[in-house]
Length: 315
Ligand SMILES: [Zn+2]
Image (cartoon, rainbow, N blue to C red; front, side):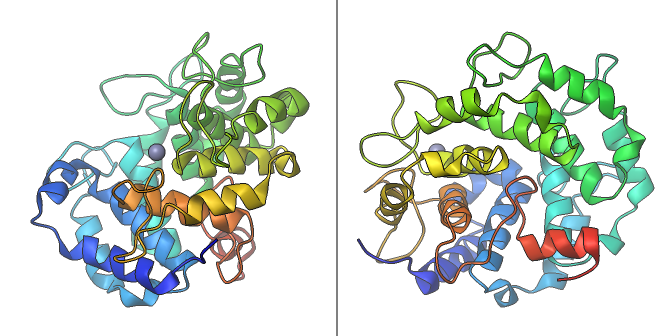
């Protein structure tokens, strides 16, 4: 088994940022805020965040802020959405620059997306999904204003999306899926409500996601994919069942998805790399305490030192 190529991955992330005019950059444009979060968090886990010009990133980010609604868009001139709003808050948390935000305005935007039944819409268009519950709860918690929403109802809604297999779906009755489980378990963890989770039942469902090749899939009968290393592992850690999977086989699977020549990590061995899977691969290795990586918090998806700085004033 090879090792994690720290230097190549840093070079890959920097090169993606420079390729703003490529076709890939064009089709991914609406996701630029998420891409920035994936790239910057990976750089920080690799102890290399100083290779970027923070002030330049912050001034671009603030040009994606919609002062009317209070939310962030994925890129300049697009509509705001919770997805991009959390990424923006996470990036500013990484930089220790939450002070540039109009926290009242931003938190009012998030609060305004909570519905009567406790669920959240992702934006003004109204689509409902437990992913949005996580985004809203994580965002408000990082801004220290979780008390502005109805937390009891938000938790009740998430619990209403729990299935008989112990997992969670996007709406009540929706099929269990690892990405959705991360969002629900993460939101329950942040709100101190993990007693609603059946840890053994859910832990069993999650550890059954490990495939013969060592990688993890998102639901039964699907192929293993590096991104599930994050969603499954972080959930297992939050419910204290991570020892139920074979960490060395998963580590080997992720390391085999590296592009040894140009850096970056793909969804499965020999596929093309992208920034999304590079983040989830490195974050997954961090959750497994891979030597030399910064440890990442499984609920906030930020380095632990950043989370400690926000909640305990120390790094
Ligand atoms: Zn994937």
